[in-house]
Length: 639
Ligand code: ADP
Image: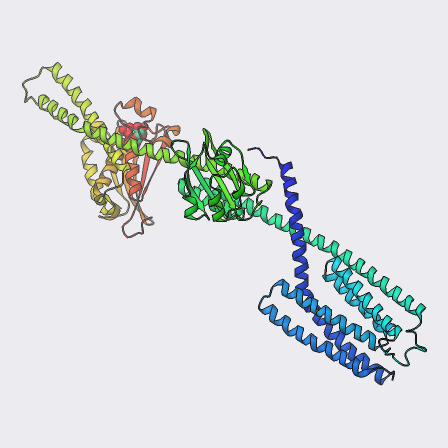
């Protein structure tokens, strides 16, 4: 699935160019929205300015001018600005579209140009100092509009000024001078007109060019920053998704959970409409949907996907990431009509590869055509690689669980079948050794005694195996832990060992550190008996003459600590981690005791776990061992 990073860069740039154009457009639109309210603020000043200047030239400089018209222009500016102000306030509350703002800006510009042309005409035309006010609007346009529109606007400004001047020059429009402002009328002096218009026009064009270029440059920079930020966000999102998938790999072994979390994470990280995983069925040929996010049931059930004949599946299963830019038209698709109906326009498929070949396909779906680029291909193959590990782990775990179940069932079946012949043989042998079948000579008795010992060991083995097998199955209702008195069970089990202990020459002691006659734990009587019996029998079995076995009982925070300590042979350090495994026996134990199944500890660990408790062991080779059992006390919330 090797995908080179250099190639990725090329694809990335293709996307970047279109993204950048989009960003610039968005920026211009965003500026338009801001420009509307900014222009309104400026216009209050402009309208008031026209009125103030008119008052000043009328009352202080006493110039002759069409004052009614000038006041009228000032008031009109303020009035139509009031209208724009109210509209803008309403629009910002109702979240109007960018088109609305564009229209608002165009109308403002049109009215402003009319007002400025009137102001220009009624304040002396080509002789008017107001001519330079056009430049403000040219600057504003160059800031807010793209360069081509800004140039159109500045040409319009030139045409309006030149047009008015021309009409006044030829007398179609009556010249409205500010009498007393200039020593002599200039509006009919061609040289003056040409000079002013020439400088005015070139200023307009140069200003537009300068402001527009600077603004363009700034916009480009801004859109680059936006694009970089977006890239960064996308990369972070994808890293998070990869991290999430890594967590999934480590957190659960449940196959269904693994797959479902994977499809959701992938779809969200790639901002895609949907994601699915299809796995090869047992025949290794058909792909079955096993986890789906964001697809309709109709699409999922569209029909069988044959890994041999379905071109897209075949190509992907061969180990390639397959990018379909226009799904409904692709010849690789087996169900193009269904994809069209589902609204899917592009697809990206990656193989899920296990140690023994392809296992399935991970696929993302998008509603836009040509949606996925090389960067996406790299990402999906990384996700698919991680997913494959998760799937393999989960499958292996599933296999182990099934095997374990099968093993338990097998043991249960075999031992059940063995139990009755073994027990019948044992009682038959006992009948003979007890002399009910006639007298035995010493040699016969000796042989039969050995046979009885062997058959008793066999009986224990069968019992242990049955316990182990049933323990793995779900506990039955009457085996559920209930508050059970522990001290009585301890005393009963100790009583059982009085004779073997004496015969072996060891001391057995019970230390009741909780100073109570009764203590209840969550357990069953049979379970407690089994636990204590096993620990005590081991302690006695693996402790040599003159040794000591101590059972102690202590009440702790919410639990009972039961310890069976001996001064016996101890357990080699390397054996400690394997001690609770089925059939495991430490080498030093095998040396001193031939008979032993290595099942006892594994069985009692299972029982203790079912009671919500735990078991630990501490031991020193040649010095002795301590087995610690912790069981939850009655009345304490069980874990
Ligand atoms: P078994 O006693 O039948 O071998 P268990 O499962 O009860 O089976 O014990 C497993 C192994 O743990 C024993 O074979 C022995 O090596 C070790 N073991 C258990 N209890 C003790 C003990 N008290 N002292 C030393 N070794 C022990």
